[in-house]
Image 1 (tube, helix red, strand yellow):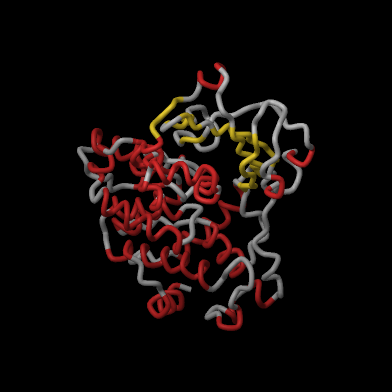
Image 2: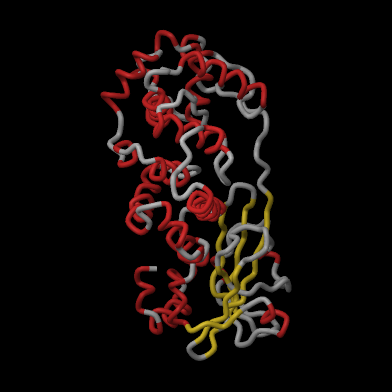
Length: 360
């Protein structure tokens, strides 16, 4: 496997900036960004972070709101918060020098087995195999692993195979090659089996179970949830709310919420997207500006934005009124960004007061 995989990688690997460095900080940065994110989407963010924070000390000294703003659009914001937290620990506890052994790297916040193995092998040539979704799929198909990959037994079986297969002289290249192979050739759907260099030795291909492997035991349960936002503009100010509780989008800004449900069942959280009834008025004087659906890993959100002339005292207790000119400096969830960008009513107001929104 090693020689064949190495030859394939040298001919087919993508030219990515983090493959041209041994700097553990930059490697760590790329790995965190690429968690739950495809390369094409993550690359611009990686370049922006490298330019804004060229060293781990630069990242540690940055305000959290600034880091979250730069991260905006990538989702899974706990990654950004852990990135910032870990940079501070490395700066203070390790004098700004990234740890060079697996156990110390693994002990850092937000760094699990996979990321620790990636940094250890890519930056320090330590023989720790990585095990992510791409690698799990490649090994399961190639070696016929039928134990569910999302169980402890399945992960142990995969790691046993990888520990035997990894090139101890060049573990970084082996790990990158396996991940690259899973990402570009041995894909979840429509894998390129006809062009695969492992075709003759692949268990899944020989036994015609490519579409079955890998096997997963647990499926994510996606629960419906609705959010009703109150959009209140007063002169040159707009009311916003920072999400500080342990919930989705922690640390980001959105609008005050209301728990008063509309009378129309079309806005139920389990109903289809209700964009078609924008302009609907409620008895309390609120007018629907925009509605959408937004899918998270464990939640399917139905979100409605309601124009209101004033907020209740209760809503104001958790919100703050800011100049509209400062709105585009806030880190906001994607649905809030889309609402501002697409809704003519609020977009005209904000853009008039805040020209920078064009780059928002």
